[in-house]
Length: 197
Image (cartoon, rainbow, N blue to C red):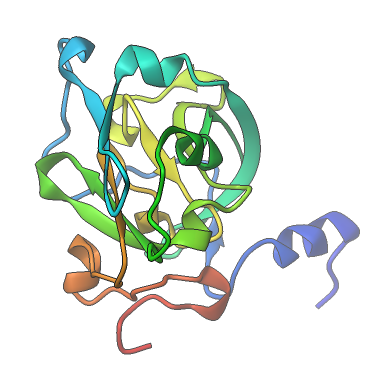
């Protein structure tokens, strides 16, 4: 089959067994939180750190903004290309908290005790961020307002919505979906969808 230049470039960006969509499907487990007062929201940085820190919404919004473009790939089989994000680089979190030397992993905590795990190098990758804006508009509640993780090189369930805490840990612990059969790492190009893959 012949592909034009543009078609073959797009094909190189899409992992195996994924279908490109321009829509952004809403997928989650549990309720969608609707915040009436962001004065009650904070982001907790804790675990194997010298001192636990809580950042208010205002303090998070004062952190320098990064703008990144990337492709996202959902474990359910869709990919959405050329997403424009604004938020804070995860590397800025590193400046806020002093990690103990034995830290190897991150457990991201979201509303309703939802969690997902990441190796520390994935969390601090150049393309990883905590986003509040998508394609020029503030995130909607369904997509993670006020703040969601964006870890684009992994399947999108690793990009937790409605985050409330980042726990720095020594040994890898499964999060919600990982406890329910999803892969511990989730690399799209290796099709690491499920724990038996």
